[in-house]
Length: 266
Image (tube, rainbow, N blue to C red; front, side, top):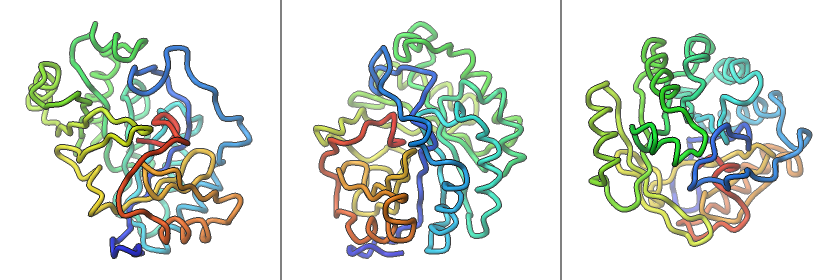
């Protein structure tokens, strides 16, 4: 698939839930957020059917996100269903890592290739402050479980304010170097103000080469993270929603007043 700016669209990010077990200060309020009703969230068959159609149109890279995808009941089964689709070359997941020690081995058996794990500091007290409720030891355990299970390469997503030379970022980089992990620095973004930049160590945020569309937990196809545009698969049908998203994908991000990071998948 090519959009009107001749960018090849082959990357699908799927948010499987708007729920999360953490309350990171840059993502959601301390008391949580209004959650989607159960019937509003796409079921596994809907997600898999949509993904199969997207793959038939040229998608070969899929990433599972949330919220936190590992809180979705039956997530291992969903990974198995998606991995069975012919044509997917890269099946990955972004997770906070808290439950990876429980699921890593089963995720690999189900067909997951690799993971990105969010880690903004290696200081236990600072981690608790950033996530409000998180136990950093569970993340460390999850990373080790992912390595043992063969989820490679493991990439660490580290949120920064301005520079990768910030003390917490330097400490995370040292931890990654010592543990054979790849680090990606992500500047804190603001959807409503349109503040974003290219991910250091990745390709996210580079509008000129953007190759992705996003499926939210309630079935909206978002052609751009920083845009209000959305095309619902239940209203339009999967193929029509994909076509509309590709045809109307903007040349660059602007602002998004209709979504939040916790429900769009980042």
